[in-house]
Image (cartoon, rainbow, N blue to C red; front, side):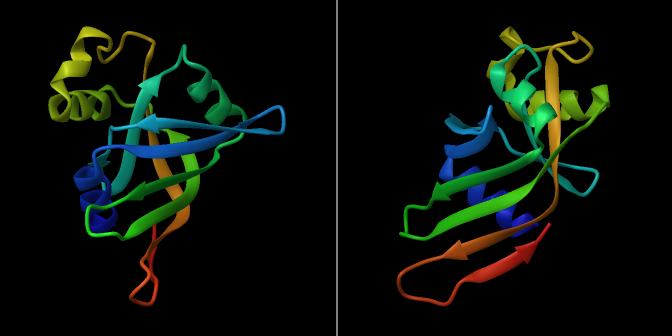
Length: 131
């Protein structure tokens, strides 16, 4: 899992896919953390993306590295109801403190569970990592 974290952190921006009313929704994201041994992402409960993940937790993330490899992470986005997880995330991304605060009812941390990541390239066999 650390390899997945390091890949997404180095990429800076990844694309998170959800569904809404049977239609795909994809948007850029940038937060990634490890909390209690789980890969986590962060958003706001007031945003459509959080509502989409609560309605259908199955998500996919895709990012590309500078060396031409890419990663696809497929997992369930499970809410983490722990203000300490939100605080840990915001310590890693202090610029978000202007919008989010642990315990504000909006700051949402989701753990990526029951999934896998596949790191691919045009020059090597894919590497699969279980989450």
